[in-house]
Image (cartoon, rainbow, N blue to C red; front, side, top):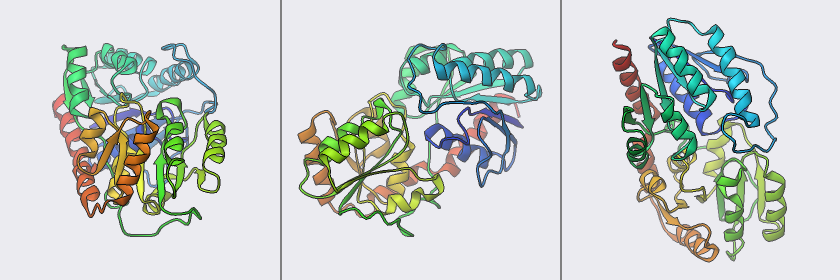
Length: 352
């Protein structure tokens, strides 16, 4: 079976969508012909074929929220046109991952060539995934039960399957090397892009209310300077911002004591949550249906806008003996098992 992923930012950044494509494509390539189209170079350890479409992109540029016409949307559209010019017309499954122009253009291409288009709800309930549903994919893959219900209500004529994102349980483990951070313990960790919807500033304010401990933010983004300034002001001597290659992240998780995630309630998943739990870390996350489904009993939930409550719950998580609860929860999200579900879905759609 011939499978094509369109992964615009692949090779340049390694966030949830890029992790999803890399991990899934690697496993599917064992029995299928998988090609990933991206603008960055091939990642180390990639077993799938990579076609790099070189395009200049300013990742630090602040984006607007005008669909299709904003800075990144236009560039994704141009990228998609270039990909579709070279795509093998015998491709069975086409899988756009960046939405908007990509989804609509891929749908037109799939109708012309008789292939099937799949979209995964990586954006989360909201306008972007509404646009994905309006592109009429052959199947929309929801990452959680609550997202599946939302998708069925939003577009009842589209087939919806539920398959979560996952974690490599052999890489992200409790035992192993730990990176040296030179921060006072305990260490509270957040791994997220420095964008407004991740609400990292709320984490800084909450940790500043604790009598001891440090905060480590790992990521990149346009909001880095603002976060750096706030962290130095509220957490002098116990705050750092770093960025690490994804293959070093297991050592970072193991160096922390608690993982926290203050994202907006409509974010689709948060692969970092399962990576942290696989590494043995308990979670303090936004109290919403998606995070509750992913984390289960492996953490506490909070309204991160309530700084005092957030601080109390962080301290509660630090004080509790979690045992192997986080690891057991993460074992429900093995990439190996998730890849089998996608493989079966693709075979059914392609009639193989």
